[in-house]
Image (cartoon, rainbow, N blue to C red; front, side, top):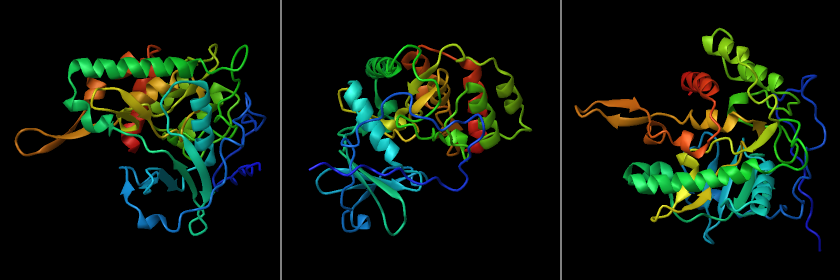
Amino acid sequence: MARPQLPTPPPEDGDHQAADQQQTSPPYPSPSPLDIHLIPAPPDLSAYPQIGHRPRFARLYRLPDGTVVKTGRLVRPTEARTLAFVRRRTTVPVPAARGCWRDPATGHWCLRMDGVAGALLADVYELLGAGARRRVAAQLRGFVAQMRALETGPGGPDRIAAVDGEPARDVMLQLHQAVYSSETAFRRHIVDGFLDRTLDASHRLLGLRPAAADQGFVFTHGDLTPRNVVVDEDGRVTGILDWSQAGYYPAYWEYAKACCYPRVMRDRGDGELEYVESGFVVDGMPDVILPWRYPTEAAVLKEAYEKAF
């Protein structure tokens, strides 16, 4: 018997649709509804151990069978469709999505997926030797190359959107989450939604030459940083997590977002703590993983990101 088709979630308050943000059909066929299906909810998620480090964005629960449930106000069925899309078309190690449901108590979507064995790269990066770091970077570079090849015809996608045609939901867009038909509109709404128009960064961002204007839009993870990469003890990448922001974006977006990886707190040696650049950034890993470099866009967005977060 065919599984029921997953319904499209209603728009949230604050979602915007401007004249140049056209809600048209997806730039390629979305994953089959049979890949992602509605499933019964477990009795009570609070009965299971909570894992993860970012409750502001989503909560993660580990179930006895080893699967993980992700839920929160920012969780969407689109992420499940993205996992299916990437698993079918690449060898990028992503969790298998098992299904979705909507929590009747909170109204939040819940996504159940396979767990991934290993440790977050963020937790072990400083413990890895130079050779192990290079091996991890080489694997990620290969995965990014596969992602960049996810086009569906001459010229590739012609709009900024998620894989199922839903609005792009990058955190930098804030309330201005929409389907963008041009890079110029996308950039303007980054300023509207994320930057203060009085910031020098805003003026510089708006004044930049559209780096991706003649390159089309490319499939992008949106937060390809150590907090979303899982590795085993041999330095093999076993999983890339959190595809909530993924979709088709300007060519510079993956690189600029990776360069925004937050600073880490360390002891200065005198008992005082200070924020310093992570080893991931100091080692220039974004440059190794992403051979397409956009230092100007990265510098502008990093300045704004640090002011906001």
